[in-house]
View 1 (cartoon, rainbow, N blue to C red):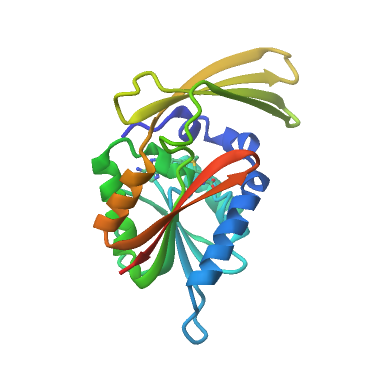
View 2 (cartoon, rainbow, N blue to C red):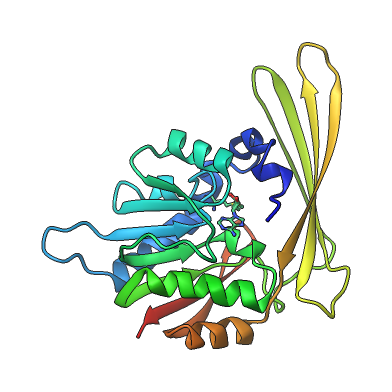
Length: 247
Ligand SMILES: C[S@@+](CC[C@H](N)C(=O)[O-])C[C@H]1O[C@@H](n2cnc3c(N)ncnc32)[C@H](O)[C@@H]1O
């Protein structure tokens, strides 16, 4: 699988582009769900696994409360995660096939699930989540978009400055073919070197999966979860949460 440049040679931009504080509200919602559904056995800590943990920007808000494990396919992103959240166990793996030979109280997949492009990918990923949960364990899946809340042509821009560079970026999402199960997210980075004042413009295209609420719930059901759909808004962005309890 070829990863987009943001998770490869441009992974150093991740903490600038989408800093950990952007994940605080989502992490608070996840913490609430984990507290509601998972009880620690005796003195054991509650064990939480994130599939597609990226730079650990969500886990950094959870690690004080829970014993955290991060899985991600990208070596540089796991490197970011190790630097930010050294307390978490970090593992390189594909969420569709990784097997850690241990179970957790909760497994969640946040925006990384966007990179599952087909029913087959999603089913394999849900099988991974199920394989890592004990009966009664909590599974939370949070795609950025579902068919129901997708905004065709959505644009966002932001920027940040470090000692050496000024980063400005634009995100544009669109659905080139509504008949298939994907959309495209185009990222444009303008990186200005503070010393030379030269600006580099980089285009980075991401293909992402787009499925309906009904598809998510039915695939979760088939994977062995009692599941329900909840919708939240975090920083004005729609956030669809699929919450499953392993039967
Ligand atoms: C938007 S980032 C995740 C950010 C993360 N939520 C955080 O808190 O930093 C998406 C991540 O999905 C990972 N990814 C994409 N496909 C994957 C796969 N098949 N298995 C595991 N990770 C994958 C990428 O390497 C990338 O780190």
